[in-house]
Length: 92
Image 1: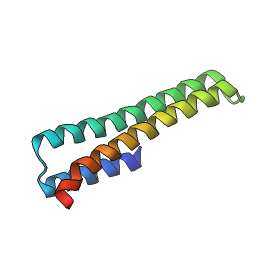
Image 2: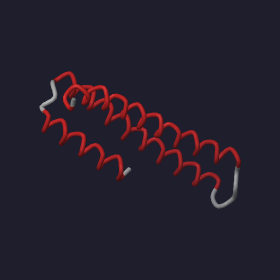
Image 3: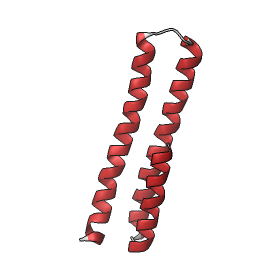
């Protein structure tokens, strides 16, 4: 979560510095929100699974945690693609 917050702050600063347009800000906001929300969902899944299974190992608990973490990875990857598409014309 900390890494994604730092990345979001850097993206916001870069957007301000480059003076990106209004529609670009909309997409950046959606991308950042998507990643933060997926982190929240991942944290919720991990907390609920830990609450239910406790200290014992459950294969389905591992699957649930892995899928939630995969959701964060997909959201972050999508946000990176959106960022590249938006910032490329401003940088080059």
